Image 1 (cartoon, rainbow, N blue to C red):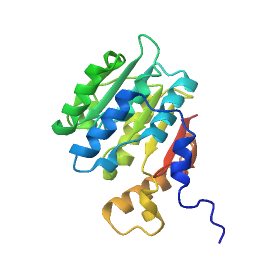
Image 2: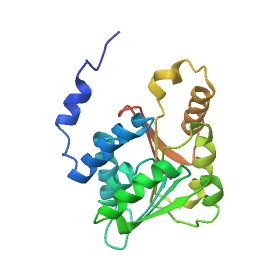
Image 3: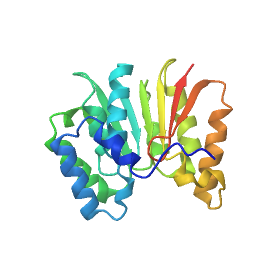
Image 4: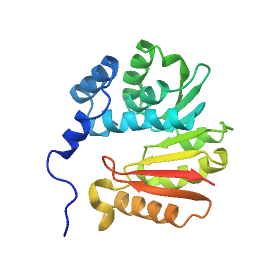
Length: 211
């Protein structure tokens, strides 16, 4: 079988990607030093992809489901125009405390509004529309989040969903999370309301455009 990637290719990609800001570098270091699951961090390659997606789509209103320590929110907020808004949802007070501290330190932090609590409940309170949505939260609810946000995304709007390869477990799903992500991927693949491509960036990003 042809192998398209070799050891070291992730590091090579990082070396050819726009450098992260000092604030994001500090946030990344603190997350790895203090958080129980630092691998949940979006990181510089995917973070810059998110930033470029906001820039190229000219999004003015962004919704993020799954804040963690705020790396992805800050990456996207950098690209928002003056007056742009990013709503980020999470229910973990420990990671949100870190995120809020870095939002306060950033010149783009005023564009970000933290919505704390259960995302499915809070989504009912936000009308949208959202030009771009990024989903990176509990895997068992991926389909529920997707169906909740799709009506709030205008035609031509973008939904990006993280971890859709789940370290390759989607090829032979065994755990509940494995099965949930595989089922979500099948659901999107068969959804005629959207155009889609599954990107093999980091742990997989589903790039979805509403028709």
